[in-house]
Image (cartoon, rainbow, N blue to C red; front, side, top):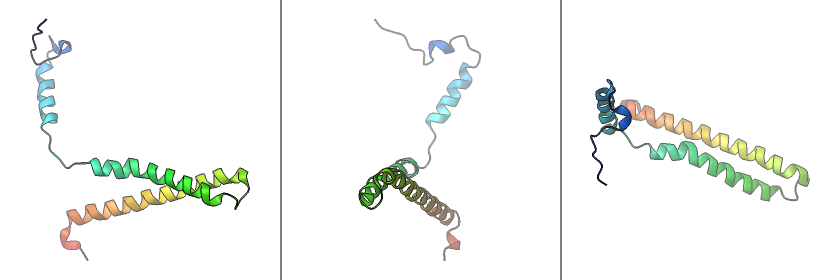
Length: 108
């Protein structure tokens, strides 16, 4: 069975706004900008990895040093603080890089 395609979904047939949607779709499809993959990884993936790694490390380091019932909560708090610190440092570095790109003459 061969289906005829008009370039518009069936939902758009008879709609008086169909030409506007097509124009918007063309604009969105031709948008060129900087790749944000690295920013997404730093903003979302790395904090989770840092938190998980710190949680596992702290849990092992605290084994035998504190009573067993406090090991996991204490490791969780420590991992949370390290991950929060990582996010703050990443934000500061990102802000500084962004400012240096906008104002290259203000480099010290």
